Length: 315
Image (cartoon, rainbow, N blue to C red; front, side, top):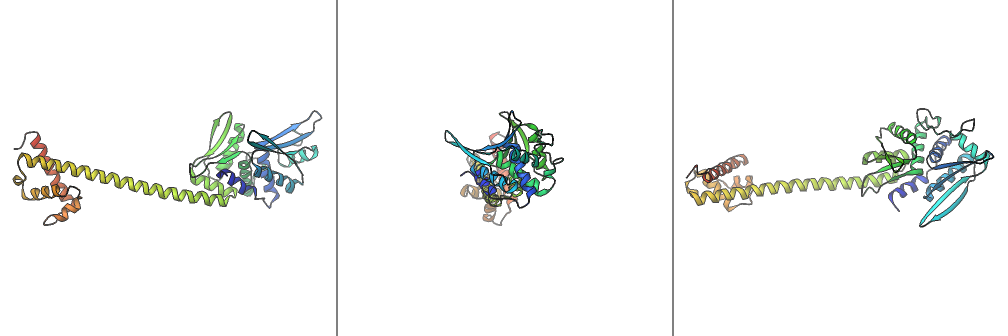
């Protein structure tokens, strides 16, 4: 089972105690993956279709507990995918369902203004969280955190995407909207914000699972950064030591190390004997001991002498 399916399975088992929250969650599911059929006789039929059994089960339970509606359920298989349909076919029940979820006004017109600024179902914090949960169950997905951080909810029209983006912004979640294959996708790629969303929806087990992955990833990245930094410093030290030894050998060939001042000769001979030693280690070998900056100063002077010899300035 994918991580997205695990989250939906966890959320499907949560049934809000407050009827107002169940209304908001039902409204989200209907708004984002519901279909309203109006016959020639002006009779209403409402249905949702989903590939996820947990979502179908959750919607069926919401209808029963919130509206006392016993919906019809059908299963259709296309290739290797099963599609689950939950249908409210009785006109009075369909009208009541649409009316109470604010998708049908008193004149019988379908309305889907889901902005939290105006929608009475979304005035309370718990109801807004329930609506987000319903939206994710209906058309949402979240990637496996082991691979990447990506949370999205797919909307068919830009208005719904913007309204959902506005709703998420009320919780300081900075969602983006992008057009993808004629659908408007509300998405988040920040790991900490996905954690926040899972908490808002009530997926606490999945939240802990994602957090554990994030902690391991951050530790791994931290170790990798440290190793890369140490490797780079080691390479730099080795390269510098090799270059210093080459300069000292050149001086030895040209004029001999005994022609150098005593402090430079001592440092030069130590560097040739201990090409792998650090500046601190070289300084500790000198008598008297010399600090890193002092050793570095001497080696720079030796390199300058070698450069002058190469240019014929000094014999």
